[in-house]
Amino acid sequence: MFVPLHLSGMFQRIKSYLPKSLYGRAALILVLPVVFLQLIVSVVFVQRHFEGVTQQMAESVVSEITLIGDALEAKDLSEAQRLGRLLHIDVERYDEDRFTFQDRRRFYDFSGLVVRRILMSDTAVQGVDLPDDAWVHVNLWVKGDNFLLSFRRTKVSASNPHQLIVNMLVFGALFTIIAFIYLRNQLRPIKRLAKAADAFGRGHSIPYRPTGAIEVRSAGLAFLDMRARIERHIEQRTMILSGVSHDLRTPLTRLKLGLSMLEDEDREPLERDVEDMRRLLDEFLSFARDQNQDNGLAEQIDVNLLLDTIVQDAQRGGISVTFNPCPNSRTVYIRSASVRRALENLINNAVRYGDRAEVSAMLSDRSLIINIEDNGPGIPKLKRAEALKPFVRLDPSRNQNQGTGVGLGLSIAADIARSTGGGLRLLDSQRMGGLLVELKIGI
Image (cartoon, rainbow, N blue to C red):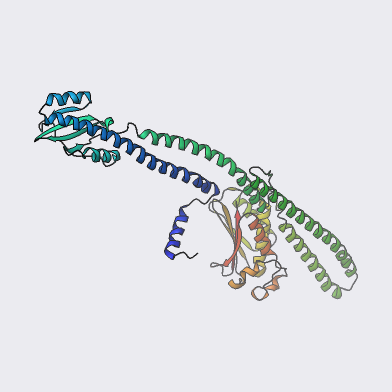
């Protein structure tokens, strides 16, 4: 269906003010019908019922005013006053010194509209004053004389019309609160399911038992089945890779023993090849372990202490790397083993293609951002997305004379960051001229 652009823009603006959470939207769905139902009932019932009652009562008062007016036409003020006392209407000759008549009505006095309209239908009535909810004053003109008729407002208006609205508001609020409590209990299993799914996506397997409505239970059972299949698949793959590792290490060992019996000039190149095969095999297994998301348990640790320890360990290994402490360092809850592994991969990758590297960190309420900069050749922007894929080596853009690799360093670090709810970005280092790797760890 075609929607005009101005209407589409209006819908988008309205949508931006609507609740984003399921609980908020469900509450809105619950509250709106209750509010609109109360408004409709109030308008229809109050308007028809109380307006009709007011009209009947006002017409009755018109008859009484007519009766008093007939007595006044007979020039019998005392008889008119006697009738007024019987009808609970004060009758007196209009005296401007005692009373200043004002033809007034409060703007929110809607029943006053009906009262004025009915009372003014009597041609002898010159004005109706509705100063408050207590009294009504009528200016009656009879044979050249003005008379003031005063009576209680309850003679022409239904008493306590606000009670209906008060009852509707009180009981509407009460039942809405009860519905909110029930709604919260119905949405709680969905939130528990979302929490379990989010934790599994971060590498944690927290206890979860499907509860709630049939549909929520079905979704929970489907999640448990999916989680079990994924864990079983990862376990089987890890066992296969472990078996492959064991099977390959044995012939590699035999090769090393056989090569040790050769002459030096024939042995050394072949031993380097065997060593490269062993190292590549270790990297494959390391990548498989990281894909398994088995990166240790989360623990409370100071950010600067963790990063400084990692950098110092790298320096003892002969790597040229420095650390700029985080200015707002504090204790955070993270998996230090996974952060160490990711950072070590990135530091090794930086010094492999540059002379030195620098590590710095920034801390926010929800994430730890670690920057690793080098003075190497960097990576062109168009190839950065490809560089994050496993087993990708960008030979034209990186210096391969500093050691061989299989293109897993960035991929391992990116997988670790994503497992915590963070990510990894490749940028240009404005300060060192090489590559800046931004590692974002969720906390």
